[in-house]
Image (tube, rainbow over all chains, first blue to last red; front, side, top):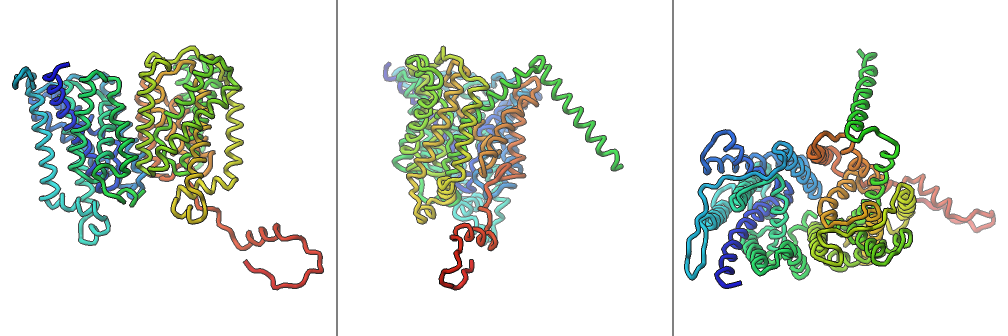
Length: 296
Length: 333
């Protein structure tokens, strides 16, 4: 174990953590604002990566266009989830949880049925080449791209929530659905938009994850989705910036643990630290009190 | 037209029955009584753990780490049976106690501090942490599994355990504790205002739920004879959870029915791919949540008491009149 190795692990950790953060922000958007824990979020991520593959299969031979197609599929999935499993059950937090779980089961096994369940290779926009920064520390251009895309997605989300009318409406909805209704916000429409944006984030996360590992499989969203929930809970529900910090911290902690030789305990880090943090701060590190209790 | 309808229905039923039977035969060879008995035995084992989860849900303890409790019961059984050589019947209450202690631990660490959604996520993480522990522990066999547990659960032993458990739940449902469970589920605040010790009631729910789940783990361990950590992942929790949620929270019969649905439906609808049966699960859940949001037997309001009921109740409690009591104004209810 020498220092350059650890610094390289740090870069990997940042790019992994950025994906966790995007997943958590996708969860946050629908949970923090509409009090719906969308357990089909992982399946939406998976569909994003398979949408990219489908575009290739249908003869589209450009990575970026195929990625747009994948994200489009994820957005459609998000909208469909809202119409099928959330809108008919509005107000029942436990029921929407179960119903979205059903949607996730259905989608994942549908894809597994169609593709025979094997992992599939995902093409990359270019083959990774490694550049030496200094003192023997190498970073691949795919990692640089991942980090850049993640940062721009975060900035885009912040701009969306702060500047656009739809984003502002979502923030009002997060404060109080009744207030939103009374100032003339169409709650149904804003909820739909929220699910669409969340689906888009899921698609981006799914494609970034597929790019990192060079492959995807029907149940890829299960572990990734669980990590996203962990980040959401630790950060505190309703806090976007907290998701970013905690996601990065979790990614770095995990890859550092692997780098230091503790790969057996990789998943334990996330879950155990979450339990400990919840015991000390029951509303997460950045969360505010009385958020979930409103509905639960 | 109407005279044809029964014929049509009858034909449809016959066709579906034959298709089901043929499908079973195609997959499992001739369907024998032994096979059906095996299926029922597995269902009974599943049901014992699911009833443990049901008790927790009635008390509002939304546990998503339930597979971890099943695993504790099963691994305790493994240690008792293999390392200490304790036979089946004595190990049964001991593994139940192990599950109970684990339930107390869940309760003390998590349920006293977290509630609702946070409790669900916290217990889930606890269950996953347990799996990682078993996976990396040499004493428990690690990823290779914990082998050589004697085969002791058969339809007979499972039926006896299940009968005792159902009898116990039937009595529990008529007791004060059941009302207390429901009270702390609906509102811990109101419950404590009514003089219910919320912490003690939570402890009781986790103890009972943990004990039943430990029994289920014991039966499971004596059935599959080798334990692997992956058997106790979130998937097992989800299957147990489905049985409870499909059944609803009114009585344990709901879980018995919901569990039967979850357990037998895949066997009846199996085609070549197991994937299609999970897909079917997913669709069923969505449909059920939309049509019956509270499950098949939703928790209803307590039965309304009419004036006549109260009169009857009062008459039962009033001592028989001897005729020479001092007259008093008649009571109205």
